[in-house]
Image (cartoon, rainbow, N blue to C red; front, top):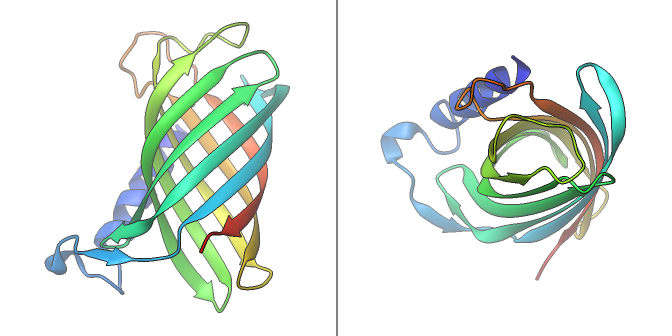
Length: 168
């Protein structure tokens, strides 16, 4: 349920973008690329079942309000996820952002929970704070599931803390 809500919020924040109204399309612009390292608690069926490490890279290009990225994560049970998608940053105040992201990807279960299939969509929300021009920290929550591609679709959540480094 929550994943669908996050995906809708991602879409609404993109369509109603004040800095790039949808009538302008998705013009390409240059922005700062960055890397993000995240540590997460993994939640399945309302129970914490493990931990996850995630690495993400965000390119120095935006398309309208969307910045393209790629990400890989690995749980302590060997669950591997790899995806490509977009992040939408909404500046709340100088140095404080509320982010929405959406990443389609591939899931390899290994010894992790059965999520019903190998195509998984991750959508999430995140509160991000700039420590200085090079470093940021964030607290996020995301949901991954197949979006009902398969009959069995229990979904999995992560609560994560991230450290972010802007690249030159």
